[in-house]
Image: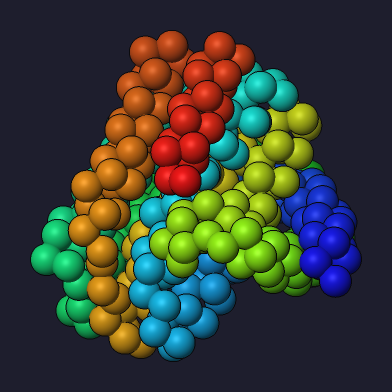
Length: 314
């Protein structure tokens, strides 16, 4: 049964990731926004759905370590594993003004989440603060960040007769995206179930399960989506998916879960795991700012860092 869950989950993840990237990019073109914006909103929030489901289930059954481990561990996976695999497939060109917008935003969100965890509990009020932060981020991403090149008035006039066709095309892409997200959610749940059952057979602690098995399992949609995006040379979707997912994990999942019930934060997370997450996040932003790209050497170093971090947990 464990093997069936793992294989079926991976199959759905691959198919869902393939069609999500394909139709998200096409939708971005139809709407006149950049793939980066689509990656940081629709794609990122959609691929974070498994983390939300797992975290809500964990908090309702009083498994607080799995909640924090899933959020923090998932973000570490996104930065050091997902992004490194994408870069190793094809180097990512960092979009212009990246560090002044998305990079600064994700660092600020990480610092905010850490600050709210310092007293050992993410309270109801903390949850509200996180959700306000998420709402502000979404508004800034959609309203303030530059859009893709718009059509000229002449182009719009010549294309006016195609309005019905274009509208139909947008709806078709949205339906494909919804279907792909459903496949990712189901595939992720199957994969997590199989992975958790396997880890329990090995006698691993709950906190470690949250930081590794659950984090990697629920991040599987991001892994598949980002690697497929990199393969298709869609740098904006690849990096936007990772950063947007990290924002949603901390601000959205952390906020929603805290509204359901306060989350207890074990000191271990503050001493080690948050430090690793913050260092990895700042490192990627600084390298992206300096080099304007993330190459295979950087990807190899990030992957090695993740392997070292994971080994230290056991």
